[in-house]
Length: 213
Image (cartoon, rainbow, N blue to C red):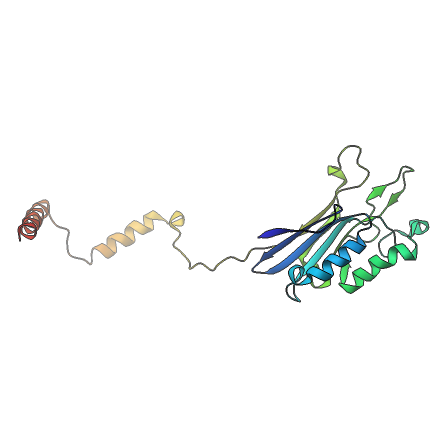
């Protein structure tokens, strides 16, 4: 099941998934939302991460640049410490790992330079949940300047163990009929038509006696 988390910001959309395998909270962020995210996590952590085994995903446009994820050719774009440090502190506090390969271009500037402001972060304990994470230029909408980032998250639902059943579709009916004839031969011979008629009369008489008495 899932619920929408009520984050007091128009730049954050959050959904919490829960099931037999645990809990996962997904935060879709835009721009500089570090202050709001920090406050929300601090006051709602028991809901977001009910157990030490649960995970979070933070994704979308963080609108900042750092050597951890930006390509070497864009060192001149590195965000100043006063702007980037709150995000770095938050990533360290919640032990978040980068799921999107560092240096993956996601945004093209008006000058034609590709940069990496969009990212996907996941709790270190949950890195196995993301089975794939990459850009998908082939589905980029017209006139969009950010590339779509497609992530596959494994939220497998455990299935109940069912006892094995007979596969009637796979029956060889020639073999089945031969086995049936062999087994039926070991029983008493079938009733004749006369015996069946006599049994029917006796059954009807017995039913009449039961009704009248």
